[in-house]
Length: 150
Image 1 (spheres, rainbow, N blue to C red):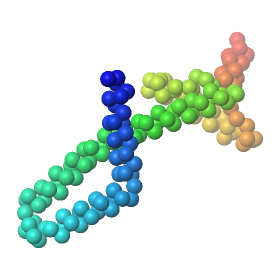
Image 2 (spheres, rainbow, N blue to C red; image 1 turned 135 degrees about the horizontal axis):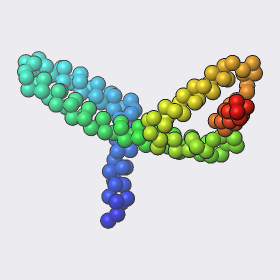
Image 3 (cartoon, helix red, strand yellow; image 1 turned 180 degrees about the horizontal axis):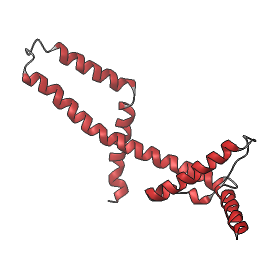
Image 4 (cartoon, rainbow, N blue to C red; image 1 turned 45 degrees about the vertical axis):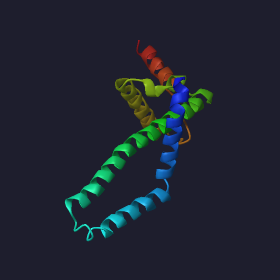
């Protein structure tokens, strides 16, 4: 049995539960359970056991939902990165250095962020608001400035 065939049922279950819990039906079921719990309060004289039922139930559901939400966010983030990588790779003039940028270190990301912040400032100062700046264009300007200082 391969890893793929073992994870498939678990993945299908996770997808189904994520879709269900993200819809209105799951909310209505949860609301009905809370209303039922509140309604049974007088019957159980608001005992500690009565309170423990809702506390335990919500704790277990929250614990499981954290993993489902994280899984869904990881999958969505990866899909978004792949789409962005495709756009960067396909656009003429775009820097291919940005493909798989999510794999850079935090320090490398901050360096790029600072570079783009400078590009944004340059763009704000331009009279022509439609003019764009790329990393390569900024590098060429920078190299030109260095050469002229020598």
